[in-house]
Length: 216
Image 1 (cartoon, rainbow, N blue to C red):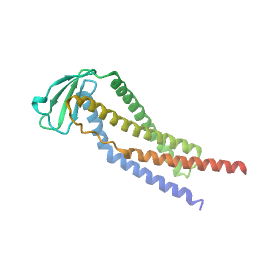
Image 2 (cartoon, one colour):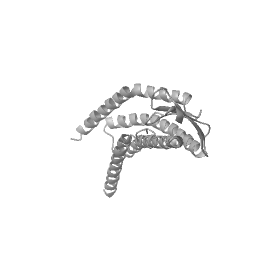
Image 3 (cartoon, rainbow, N blue to C red):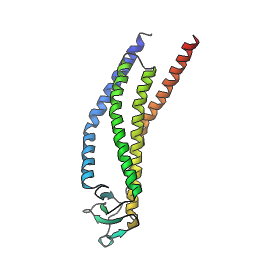
Image 4 (cartoon, rainbow, N blue to C red):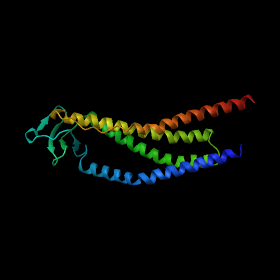
């Protein structure tokens, strides 16, 4: 039975590599499109040139279009063709929003770098698992480097959506318009949570194994 154990790990690791490769290939087009859309949005309408496109639940009558001022910013609302999308222009934001926006950008860059590194760690993890090594301190350390970047991405993604939903609601508040919010994808937490559970199980297994070796 001990000879069959590495074979099982090899089969399992091969299956994981196939699934991982298929996921990357199937989502490659979406990733490229997302980068292009993000780049275009950054150049055409973003917090950095003080414009943003927002979706609202109703079209604004022409007579309601106006410029309003508040303590933090001045905004002007314009209809974009005949859709529920409106263009909000503002000349300044409060320091708090600018700070959070810059922090999220920094957090996102760090998370992206960590995820890229975790891909190489994942390959090393699967390589060791291919040869039957999984319940070891080194493998647990690698699994930790895989799990935390994914958890960081889930936190970043959720924080990003919550922040901009709140900011966009604030921008539309003087116009008494209801924002169509971005949905929060809770599924991004599933894989990191599962990996955290596996990580804890492996840690306990290694701990028990080390205690047994000490008693012997």
